[in-house]
Length: 288
Image (cartoon, rainbow, N blue to C red; front, top):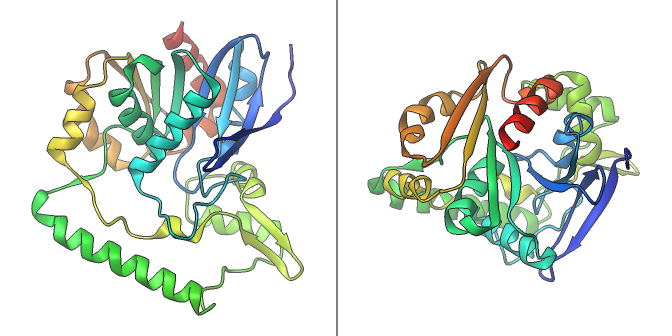
């Protein structure tokens, strides 16, 4: 039994995805997908408790140690679904179990709808459904998204956009704690994988384009169609102090799943880092 965390690397041609792996390589695979501006380290606390599984947690493009998209590309939600498809195809994975947090849950939900033959089960962590908007708001979203992209690109070309330097890792960790529900040691895991040390301090490793406003959103009807097309068993675990979006999404999306169960636990948006043992137990019971 391999009880060491390993760095893994997947060359997908167009991009390279990195990640962390734990457990015996002969055990059944459990793929873990993190949320926006997190990275694979968000699943480090879970790994020792997911006994009997070969756990692989990837860094999405633009996050952690994975590739940034090329200068002429952008971070459209649907492109992450293609990244996931490339990952499955390059590894010739048979149907596997997926655990996905926040944005990772939205990506894996869309993937499960489009490619049901590749997903054995889906566990969503504080994530259900999709961010959507009214069709009448499409033009305004397009305008805001294009202006956001233009501003970011102009700043990059003029070298006026500079990432904030932190004098120490602790400074960066405290900055992350201030804008999240994370405790210091939980934030440390994410920050240490998401930061670069340069001569004059530490800067964030993530691609600054991740913060661009999206130029489009699914309509509610499109979002509901995706959920209705998910045939694999789905489990939602959500924190009682998690995202309000999940609480409202339960009413909107839960009735649409083909095979669905939900569990409310004590904790915030990152409850899987707060209580990894309890979360792992819930995951393994569902998969089993």
